[in-house]
Amino acid sequence: MKIEKLHPKNINEERRTKNEERLKRSMDYSIRRNISDHSLWSGGSPILIHLDLELTERCNNDCIHCNINRPEGDEVAKGRELKTEEWEDLLRQAAELGALSVRFTGGEPLLREDFERLYLFARRLGLRVQIFTNGRLITPRLADLFARIPPLEKIEITVYGMRPESYEEVSRRPGSWHEFRRGLELLVESRIPLVVKGALLPPNRDEWTEFESWARTLPGMEGPPGSGLLFDLRGRRDSAARNRRIRELRYPSEMVIRMWKRQGPKYREEMEKFCRRFLEPPGDLLFTCGAGRKGCVDAYGKFQPCLLLRDPALVYDLRAGTLKEALTGVFPRLKEMQARSPEYLRRCARCLLRGLCDQCPAKSWSEYGTLDTPVEYLCEVAHAQARDLGLLPEGRMGWEG
Ligand code: SF4
Ligand code: SF4
Image 1 (cartoon, protein in one colour):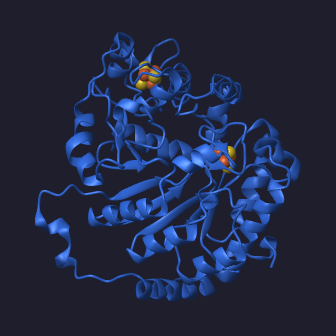
Image 2 (spheres, helix red, strand yellow; image 1 turned 30 degrees about the vertical axis):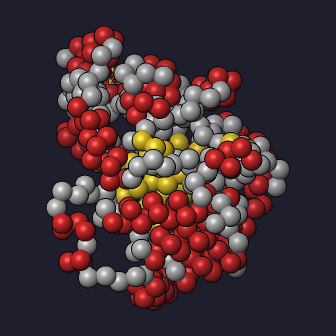
Image 3 (cartoon, helix red, strand yellow; image 1 turned 90 degrees about the vertical axis):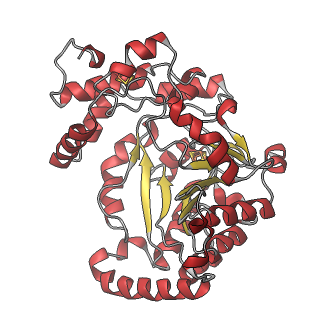
């Protein structure tokens, strides 16, 4: 069946029935326990709602903007990755701490030879599984597995171009476009709920309107596809050359704003709602996000506050301890950490635009190797956006009150 032949209206009823059947099957599949037996009620236990698992940093693509990937055949990286039983142990720990969902990401998580086993293990624990993938390694067998035992979260596929030429100029892997399309079609044919998102890059820039229209025809898509625009540098800070290249791919702030505004009146409505809640100076506390209450495990068993923040001083080695120990003994101190950089204290700590701005310790770390250096590119975008929304007069800066 071709994707173009499917239309949400035609399949809504069928999909609802199928989803109900899947949910029932999935509940039959999961291990059932009496909720009153859960260790959560014993008191003193930290609660973990969600956990990101970066199963591997390796990827079968080599995208020009990628902030993490290592080559697919990197045997050294592969040898350092957590073993199947270690991932299973972490999944068990997460479920014991109350987690309801996990995200399998990478690199390309489907490169793990034990992907299926880990997926089934997580689902048996009752965890919903979100999967971030480029879709190239979806096979009929995997699509069938997702149909029989659904992930209960939409599978997220990133699209790098509408045509082989544009896609492969980004992915730098010949043949990758056809594999991605085939993977996507397999999921669509099996009625697996999915969403697509894009990364707006020079090779695919002219295809964006076409991408949005096509995305609307996919079952499961609600609203326009998400798009990466503010490309992050490499969290490992492992390649000056690649970071230079990523910086070159970034758009000027006016163009970023133009792209955001393509959503029409909805953009302004949402921004106004957001600004009413979040436009206030954050003070000198570094972590005003959920860091310390959730986290991400990298491919080698290091528990990080979030996907991008790989500062060795802030990670916890789960090969030498447990998730519970990290959440009780180590991560809570993040909430107390204060900025020290005079520039941050002069600007970000007092900045009205802080809620609008993407500045955070993780971005600062990937750009400069510190936790509290204002990221100039993000600062520029936040100011351009605030001026465009009429929140800040020309010439005034966010920290000037
Ligand atoms: S598919 Fe994703 S992880 Fe792989 S190289 Fe591209 S951006 Fe990086
Ligand atoms: S707009 Fe600039 S000063 Fe304000 S929070 Fe962002 S980086 Fe800091």
